[in-house]
Length: 325
Image 1 (cartoon, one colour):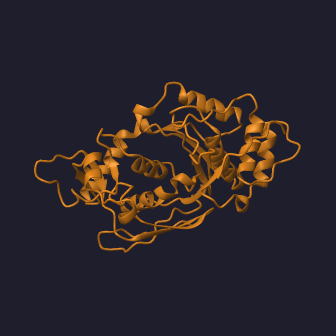
Image 2 (cartoon, one colour; image 1 turned 120 degrees about the horizontal axis):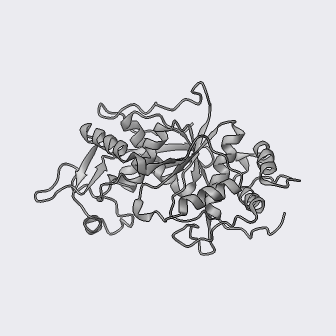
Image 3 (cartoon, rainbow, N blue to C red; image 1 turned 135 degrees about the vertical axis):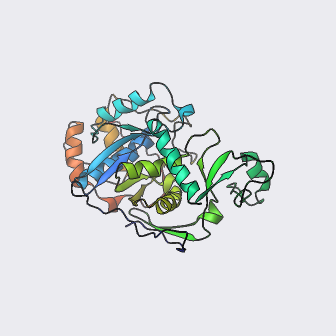
């Protein structure tokens, strides 16, 4: 089970609020949360296949969330293209897709709660300010704490940041094992409300997982380092913690993660079975035999899913994709 450990003080709630596996109706509730910034690519499909297969293997639910918290990056038509690709590939989700854009007031209420409980504070620093005051070795631009004890004279709040304790979080990831991170030294007080007034990703995803009762998060390993931040928020807010599992991300020949920003090729809808089999093999799984369509693939894959076969690496080069099966 996932967990993290830092010193519990009178101002820090207990960290034992792990979400139970069962709620009387379903013992597993997973999710997939693509951003509508473009069509799905092979890396997206790998994450979707891994999370969906894990949910099916546990006879659980699989929810679809449209991660559209950043309206400025939303591409018209991208959401419908994503839904169409998932449908062609045989994915079936529980209920209707949810959208972050409809929850802005909910996020802001949570941010106000964090402020009221002194878990968060207004910050008047711009990115340039943080960069200017960061140490030379601070390539991650860790926030130096300028406004932690109050806004300096003459400054007004631009963002809201979370108070981060100087302790080490220890996570037991289902697929990758132990992961440790000192939030104060490696991340710093991080933003939960951006300068444009919108909630930051870390805050939004925590609220969404709580509201939707998510018990299991299966996603790409590029988000492993975000998990301690999300668990800290869950602790401060008294939310239950899902179990986390991180899949290797697909990288190109130059070592860059496949992404829409890097113009990764979209997944064609013409050969859905081949797409699924290639993603399945990337995850180290035994390819099902004698399947002729996506429905037969998922029926066989559900029985074959073996997390122990997933490469225990954070990233993995994109393979030469099979052209036939």
